[in-house]
Length: 311
Image (tube, rainbow, N blue to C red):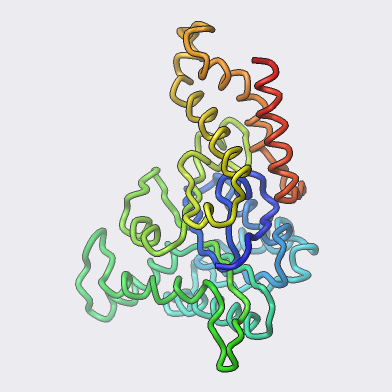
């Protein structure tokens, strides 16, 4: 893996710090803000080019994403590949491969590429249609065997750049693939298969979105497997302290809300309660608010140290 990549989104930069050439999955249901999150990444990440693949999306949403959500600023360095939900299954599948082919072409021009694909689930659905039409037997939830052989072929095309014949290494392709988990079933076949292939996963939670905090990322359930390699020891310590505070509050949240928890019963929970408003504000970010990675850690350190002073 390469050096760490500044994504411009505080929740991801701090809690799922990403290396260049890493592949991450964004696991989300419909209507929790994943399109807005993708537009933030397209506009704010520190890379040379962005390739966006919109696979199986509704036509109205595609136009809205390109013209309004992504906008002129995002389109300056972006290539968008589109296959709407009414397109034939073969076209939807090939559009996903075209997205990766364009990313590879730009990588071969020595550009650092960020590839965003929405969504791998609809690619799998298209492959299922093709497989069933060809006479393949349906397996788990109707998915055909070729679905699970095609997924790694698609996802593995992103990653660190290959070594050229002259010994130099090509630029990496960092990729984020969305996976639909309607109903909150994170163990359904496609989500489970994709999670085993990628280098980490970011979980978006409907409950967080319903209370108005965007991006609705559940940082306690999100993991970047390369994070230890791209954080300094002080940053890892800040990450650990913040996770402990968020976890302590989450474990006691119901008791706190109904007034059953008494202040002083547990110093760790008391501190978590004191820190929670500031941490929630830290995790909340407007779509046009770009924060650099080092600034995010500085702000988190200030929040945690202020909590120690109040304690």
